[in-house]
Image 1 (cartoon, rainbow, N blue to C red):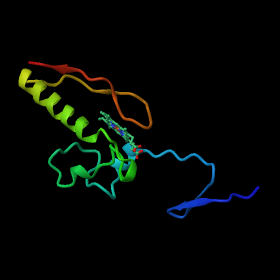
Image 2 (cartoon, rainbow, N blue to C red):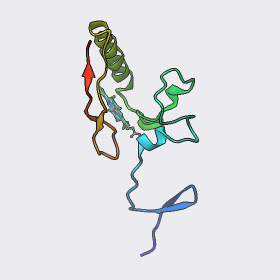
Image 3 (cartoon, protein in one colour):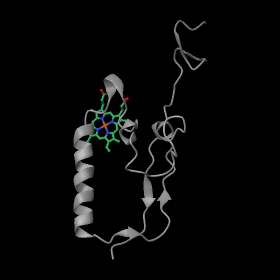
Length: 109
Ligand code: HEM
């Protein structure tokens, strides 16, 4: 039976009923969007242009509270352990959609 509806993304036809997986992590590291995309640089002028909270009508409703939680988490961490630093290579989980750490060796000085 022919598809009754489809969308086209960059020339690729997506037929009705097909699943599409959007990889936000990949979008955040796209070289056409960010210079040196694999380099952590909190001072980059467009650092707020990431897609980690989605965008558009279904943007994350908890975005503001999540940003505050992270901000105050790091403020408290660095206040308590001012000399904290990496003590080895991080190990990442293999989840394709959400990048997360399995193991992060740290020394607190
Ligand atoms: C670091 C923490 C978080 C991240 C990275 C995150 C990320 C996301 C992403 C990617 C979406 C999907 C956007 C889309 O469908 O286009 C989403 C949706 C949503 N998030 Fe979060 N989120 C976080 C924390 C939270 C918290 C703390 C809350 C609630 C207090 C929350 C509530 C929601 C809700 C209700 C939606 C659905 C919005 C909708 O479909 O209209 N999120 N979030």
